[in-house]
Image (cartoon, rainbow, N blue to C red; front, side, top):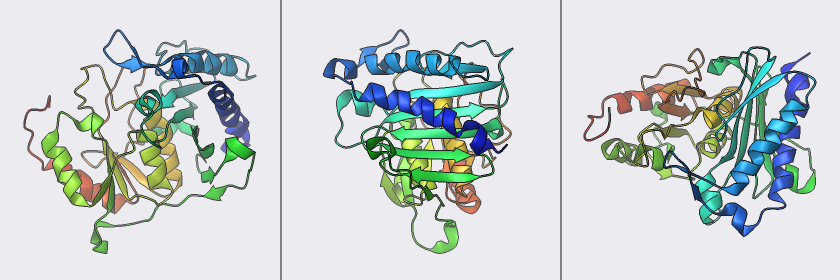
Length: 299
């Protein structure tokens, strides 16, 4: 049985739960609520935690579940590990920032303490549009526009641009300003690299690279908000599989692939990443980052 046959109904079923909850969303559900670690969440995020946990508990296979709101899970007897970001782009949801995207990212791993290479399947649902991104290890990445909105299942296979730094045209660059706030000198280099953008969502940035709309996205663990904030693995796990299956690559700032690196979500492992359309472009951007002098950051 292929990865797609094994996990497609699981990935889509989980995201259908989120879409059903979104249809019931109220203004109170959107309100930002401070958490103990100085971050914030919403009632909608918390309601999705319960829905996702119940969904995976109902599956015939045994799933351990880690989410942004619930980072403890018993994995010893589990067949698979689901890593879930209830809402990637919570700030966009809570503050109603224009038309910026937000939605859940689900990644299914076939190891209880997975590396990024152990992510077998993923799905990302853009709640405002109903667009579904999904990817299966060794079988490709796909976009179904309006999947949740109108039930259309005519999906398109995704491919990155395959750009290299030698193309001569400045790349379209997505800069996660929120997570790079403590490294202004680094953010400045990235803004000068090409044509910049920021949709305030690492999951969506990765989706845009996967479909060839952007060439590179950069994020890191340098948030002004608080020490515990991470360039979080709950969306990065799925993003890695999506971009890899579309022909791109995800590396750390040293230019090393994330494939063999532990995700480490449960213990808050930070990840400084380059999401790129090609290995050559990832290597070039990582080289630029490694040559930026640190001034005032934690590292």
